[in-house]
Length: 119
Length: 136
Image 1 (tube, chains in turn brown, red):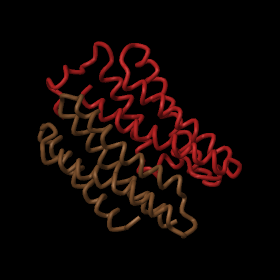
Image 2: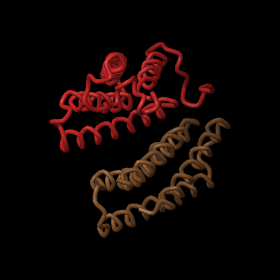
Image 3: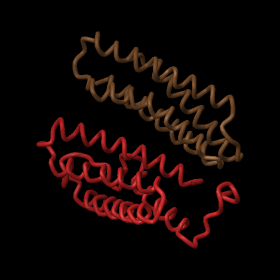
């Protein structure tokens, strides 16, 4: 995988987490800017899933745990929509709390992807 | 569910990651650390049960949640203390080793929050209606 993509995804996830935290503190609900930010993050995670899997397939490096790597990519890309759906069914401020957890989890999973890719 | 939804989300993350890690450990190299990997599998099962029970409704779900979260607290304290006193006890890390230090001590904090949540929302408790006054 391209490290720069990993850093960009991590950055987006942290911005999403900070935004979610701000909404939680201010007692607001999911707003348009956060929604589009999460949509961009999801698009990036899907691109990572495709690009990373192709890179894994064509790479001749040894020592990469491919199952774990692809597992993180799939889980990260799947986790965000699930979290948004789970958050949307909560009418109190705690819905964005779920998004906060999701963004931090995505950031952690992208870090693990980078580590696994290093071998 | 209010703040309980965030709790369930964190439990879900731990259930998922502990299960995935445990499956990889057991499928890959069970023989190198059978005790640690069995413990990982037990911890994963406890997180799965706790997540489903905390997300569920009704008296049975609550009872199961009390049991699972209590088991989790006893597990992380017992395994944590044991591995701190004897770091060479287990041949590999588990989610509960050193009180969950490898996971930012979340495994130690989570059951405390879980028990607090179950206590606060018990029947006759002080849990307000959704959105009414859950300012913190």
